[in-house]
Image 1 (spheres, rainbow, N blue to C red):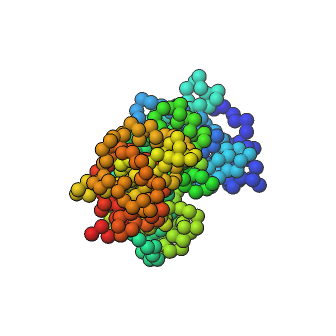
Image 2: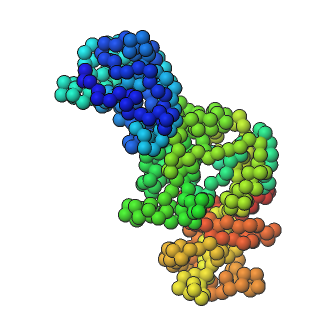
Image 3: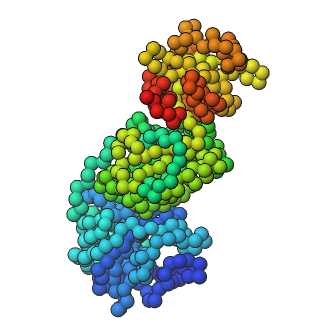
Length: 503
């Protein structure tokens, strides 16, 4: 066995790192040392993500952890060995270590416990080690060999032999649970409250890669390359997490900024926008982990597990929640110009694809989806574009005009929208009643020289109030959406979105 030039203590400054100090010197011969009973696997987010296999062995009478750095973790497929670099023995106490090694120190980065349990040596001879692991995630047999040509660098190959894990359960359908609108915030110790993130809802399917799926089951992965490695930030064999893709502007979520990323398909454009409008994934629920469905677990247990498995960084964060104090959180959301809060009844399961009152959303402002039925030409500094969008929703008779939306547009958004509107232009008014006949004082210049378009484009609009006459107060454009049919934008849906009983 090659002699290591530096051992555990030589590599560390214990006045700076939280790692435990060693009470031994030297490294055991893993092919001859007396084995112990326990094993540990660390997930180590250093310069590059890798995993550390640690087997309890004895250095004289002292328990130590013989250790290998395994870049791809232990294999789970026969015939495809993984590299395992034998490194310095670690103190037995290291088996409980989970934390952050500060920058500037050896192995700097986040360390998490990926698995632990008992093990049994099945074969132990020069250049060969076979063992059975019995852990929470790994339950099976592996075989390690030290090829002659790799012996100088102490680089082993580890092979998968057999699994004793039960077959994985089928994952749930990739349809998110939805919240019902509640008009006023409330306090209740039987409820969890968390911020409502103003972004794009997504389920992240995390296995050997990450796949992002929209609420209508579209694969969005290609649109957000910076989120392709979310799976590496989860301490799990596999997982499905629920969350929101968010773009931040001065510390708060900005749907306006995110809108520039949503419909991009060109990879060169996406790469450029990543630099100017980066996104993060805010996770708030866990549906599946390590081959087991979790949708029937109580929401508080799912959130507890979620916090355990996520290693946060600039690309992924866990949404924080509080118990009972909905009014205070709603006021904080208002103060920080957030969209609102979400309340979740403790003890409730995850209702796949359902909208229930076990999740309630309380909004500081309201938003709803509308059909664009036309626009008014712009004036002044908007003379080359349009002045306002003419919005409508459907009832039994057809498209009902509900207001003109003239704010919330950036210069870039105006530039992008006008060609879309012109492509849909028509001479026929799509509204049941021609809104240009309404009193001029009601909408000012918004209806002057109105242009009509086919009612096929859906927009998201934020507003302060819906009047009894079904008119929007202080509407502001938030963005377009391509995951909803115009026919779904109804009077009943609008009334409900405004926090009123549609009946």
